[in-house]
Picture 1: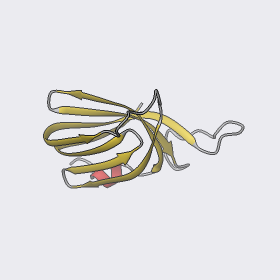
Picture 2: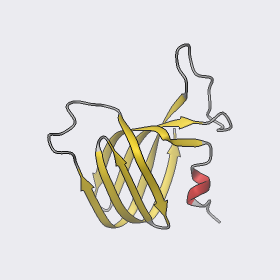
Picture 3: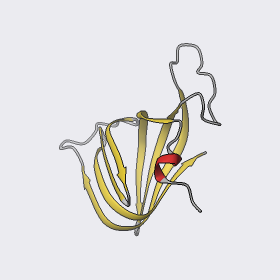
Length: 116
C-alpha cells in the first residue's frame, strides 16, 4: 500500500522550500523544487557556514491531470530563478500553490514527491 500524501512531506518544510521551475508535458506537470529539510529527514545535512537551513533538490510530479489552471503575474518574473512559496495545499487529488512564480491549481490522479 502506498504512502499517504501527507506522509510524503514528512520532515520537509514547504513554507521555507522554493520553486525552481515548472515543466508541463501532456497530462503531467513537474515542479522542480529546492526542498527545505528538517533535521529528521534522511537526506538532511548540517547547513554550511552562514546558512540557516538544509536545502535539497527534488520534484513534485503530477500525472493524470484532469484540471489545470496556471495564473502568472502580469509583467513576468524578471529573470528570477528561485520563487518563494506563500500558500501550499494538497487535499485528496487537488493541489493548490501560490508563489512568486504564480498560482497553480490542479487535480491529478497521481502526486509524487521525489528528493534526489
